[in-house]
Length: 503
Image 1: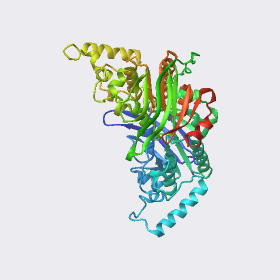
Image 2: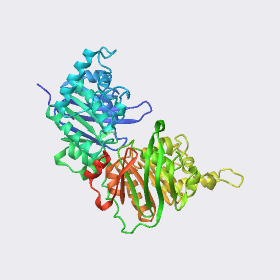
Image 3: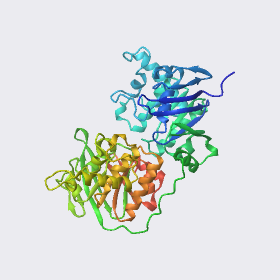
Image 4: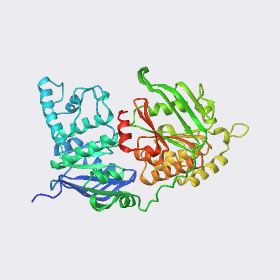
């Protein structure tokens, strides 16, 4: 008798050597021909579960059945041989190789790609592209392709290997809205052909759009399995967090104040001498959130690094009427600029330093005695205030920052930067990698600061975040602004096209 499930995991637990329980008694099943959403906050166990299903990890306890038969997935190659493939957030592509060559990598036999092989692989890929609707150029080095097209090559690799279960980890994180819609169409085509997809995302609207069923994990356990048509965004959010989240605060109707940041004809060099930012001009006013939208890698990081003094630039930049030409990060910070960096772990914190030590980075003089020694009692008192004021979950100020969760690390960075009483806050990807509760906290705080009169430059690849928070939105594509759009004229379709370079 055939099983109603393509794959079924029963009683899966994973306990790491340090005692961390990542999964506890998880049951998870996917039917043939369905798109199955997998939801959960950071640390809920999504990544661990999918690594077990794709052969990257072995469970501590439990069993996996494939088409009704018990299997042991010891390696990704064994999982692929059965028909299980995973596309990770960070692609495993060789940049100088073409799409065709990347698909051929790792095939049985290895070695050079001979003309006869290349012709056979091309023919099969063209058939797959026609059948699935997933089209990508095969003869262009993948490093020259937009990131959304690179993702297509990754999926084609799996389809060429004839997988019946495709696991996608946060597949829309690097896509424009139009590319995401195209991907959802591809997933529906695959499901119609009888293939199954596990779709991991933190965007609840995508779950409602793209999936047939959804499993919700919380703290390593399954808390719900729902037919997508019988649930709602509100219920799924509550299941993920374990409580109901309030809506974001109402925006105050205060008109924006004076210009706090003025940028004129800014040019910032990038790799190999090519400009990463090409003559950008804009202003940010007090009491305004100026958002910069765009797919990652279009010059946003270089723009921010120039403004905070980490990268050389040409043009004119003024903060509260003062030119920033020739100033370093400390001098710019002293003029009233605070910065939430896009990578909290590598540039926002020193992970081996304690919470207290991290809390005073960039402000050492305020905590030094006349002889230049740190006044540790004052440092710890300040750190305790940050813990209380920003709801940082930590047992004490002397805990190393690496032991805080991602959300609490971000609260620490935000609290430290805001304690400087800045005139301008640059928030670069402020909620990247955060769960729904931490994301809500940060977004609500940014709106509160805006209503208090702070000027905020928000850079985010999350279009929902841009739309929720911004008063004006600049869309960045290949180092240029394709448009600056006021809040009342924001339209997802229009902004999505602008993100793809359509003016």
